[in-house]
Length: 217
Image 1 (tube, rainbow, N blue to C red):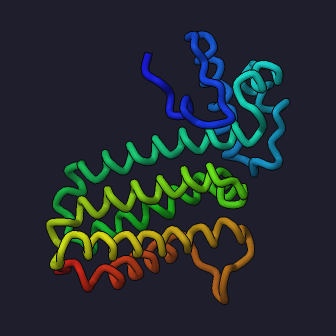
Image 2 (image 1 turned 90 degrees about the vertical axis):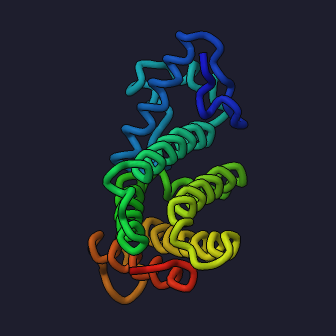
């Protein structure tokens, strides 16, 4: 049986039997369902136990504390996000897109991902936990590499220079979205933006920041 993404994480005891693994799967699915509706700090272990048909005792047998649940939930999200991006970048729909349109596609996917997972991602950003920041940074780096690989044929400079430029552009776009989820309903600036406008602005940012290293039509 192949290991789960969370099996090697600290604060988590990997299940060794299929029954235990099924229980962990239900627990993490329950965490995901609850995070769709409210922030992690408003979710109790009792709620997770009830939603997953488990007991608090069985949950704490696998997770050292509540933050272990958040870490495992983020790891699941990380692997799903990486797989989804890889699939999208390899699809026929994006294969022929020029750099500017690919960056527009990426910006819209990024906005959707942050909006749909805002409670999870906000909790990770505010966790003040080194291991969570490490895993979140790994996800950003993985996304940066995937996008840079896709854009490499259009690079007009040395690969290392081009990749550094793409990486910083992606970091800037992610930082804007992190600002939005941290501030929540407050406007992190002077003007309110819709998701569509936010995606358009992020596209402009990505295109402008990568223009020195990419061949745009």
